[in-house]
Image 1: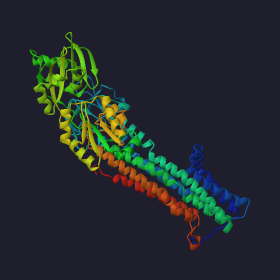
Image 2: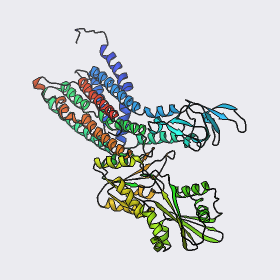
Image 3: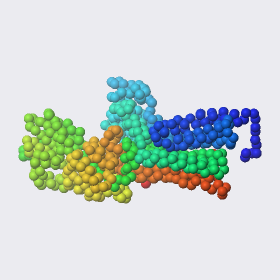
Image 4: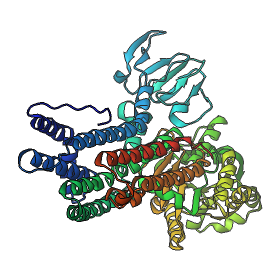
Length: 624
């Protein structure tokens, strides 16, 4: 028609029917099966609309070939299916492109490891990484990738963990430090004992969490699904009305063209892409910044958070406690004996303070006393039997339990506590034998975290099991709005519950272990500083790096993500406010008419706009 060229030949209509039938059944198969699936779930949407449009066009055109006189729509049918398949391909390609972060993560892992033979000097065997076992000793040469998670036993180097944790600066590693499989060794040579292999490794868990987040449902996706169903019924009604009106005015051919145009242009193809694409992109961005999403709905909810509650030790502070001073209160007890008794109990504990005390005692060349019948009391301390007497070690909560609070009035203890140091008391034979004062430095990032959250109009609180004096000093230095001190784990959860009952959305930030009850109680639980222990069941979001300032990044990314979702919903469905009346022939008298093929083009353009708009989310810079 455009070139002024025409061609006719015998049985032309039947050949067109045969070609169109092939296009309908083969090219339209994804839409026909998709419609069947939607109808089975009683959720008609994009696939049902496309299937309805192409089926009406095919059946009517087939009827004009064999039974009735009229204009066929074989050309429109073929064009419609091709354009719809193109849009379907664009959708799949966009989502696959956004999810390619998983492929990149998989490619990070090396394929070969240099295994050092036990008892042999400099004897190295190259083995596939998949053959590594726990306990293997591997050599990592300069510039090579670390084959699996492990602990450095010899050598020093700078290790680049940027692709894994988002940490832009190389991290110094020496004997005793943990390394992550897939990170890149610097100029030094390292010997590493393998700790984790296969699905246990950090990278494997990251991949699993990213995949889980990308496949998880979004609240906004539920809205998109409802919108698609509503649009189906609106389009179906508009198409039937258009057909009825134009059949009376201009006949069935024109009426059918209007009805098919309405069904095509209203097709919610872009709605099917609007949310999943943003989900895939935002999850990839979060992972690249060291933020892992376990619960997609919690990630969307974090944009509404009004209060962020931090745990203190290891979250706002470095968590690397060191003994600052030792005070012996029991008359006649040598300091070395006091330290041996204290370390005898604490050596059985995994608490940060316990490890710091044991390390200090051992650094003085002392051996912890032999202890039996060790028992731990969460949030209070621990006890053991040493030389036939009960020895208890713990904080102020332990003294309250033993009704020994009056001992805290000792001037030496009050002086230590007023300096913001944490006190650990040792009780021997029912009396306080002394105390160990530990100090913990605030992280430089904690100051930035509080400032950025306040700029976002988010209230900042702190919960801690530490003493009132220590908590007050930390809150004062950081500018925290309020704090609660001397809390046991269940009491932290109760405080979170009280804040929620006031009508405020709460995010709890902790280590995911001691703070598990509070993390589970909050609207959003965020585990910080998870290191290689990625799978923390009590948290909704996991921060790989021990950086509280990343909380502001999460909130901003959540807000941007939700904004993109809303924009996409408007681009995907909002244009129908104008397009459906035009497709129905509202301005036919003014010479404005939309054919089914043009309707398919317009619908596909909305899909492309949604895809491009989603990609702009990648421009979001960390910390902005």
